[in-house]
Each structure stands twice: as C-alpha cells, then as structure tokens.
Image (tube, rainbow, N blue to C red; front, side):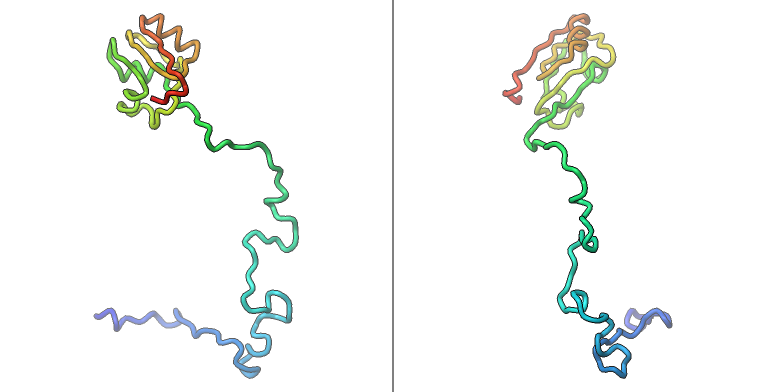
Length: 152
C-alpha cells in the first residue's frame, strides 16, 4: 500500500457547490444569498460582537473600578512554612525565601502568623502582621522591616 493510492471512502467527499453559474444550475441569480441587503454583497462581514442591532453585551454591563497595572501585591509567607524550611539561628530574607522556593518574585514580602514557630530565627521582610511579630519575638527571634522602596 502506498500513500498516493489511498482514497477516502465513498460518500466522504462531495462536489464543491458552484454558485452563480446560471439559472439552470439552481444556484444562479442571487447565488444562494437571498435578495439585496448587506449580506448579499461581496466582502461583507459582521463584527464578532454584533447582536442584530440590540445593544451589545459589553455596552450593557456596568463598568466598575479601576485596576492599577503597576500596583505590586506582597507575596505572603506564613510562619509554619518558615519553621519547616529553615534551621535554628538562620537569617531569612526575600533572597533566601526565593532560593528555597517559598516565594516566586520577592518584590514585596509579608509574613503572616499562621502556624507556630519554635526556632530562633532572624527575619527580614517588607511587612509583618502583629501576630507574626509576637510569635517570632516569643520564640526568641528578631524582626527587621525592610523599607518598601528598596526592593532587595
């Protein structure tokens, strides 16, 4: 069997409809386009969101708010993740968190107080929740807040 000898099964292919070839063909005259109007003209195409003259959905929906494209949201790290990933007397900052795969970008980092921390760890971050600060200091660790403008 050769690729050039293979043919599609019977009935799988059809003759192309030839329109505009005279009245005897059954597709002459208006060439299956109906009578007059935009849709009968060559080169006509509707916009994707056209709804037959009805007010389009995008214009019916109310517009709310504004999204600031340059706003940077802090990456959140909980104390239980830090406790699992780091040893006693370790220094934790955005670079070390990134190396361990706990955060992705490290532009802004916020430490939250979910979980317990039992190790004496020095943590440098842009923001801390009050609960996280209390738990770190209770365990004997230190909290250093990085200035938000200096993005380590």
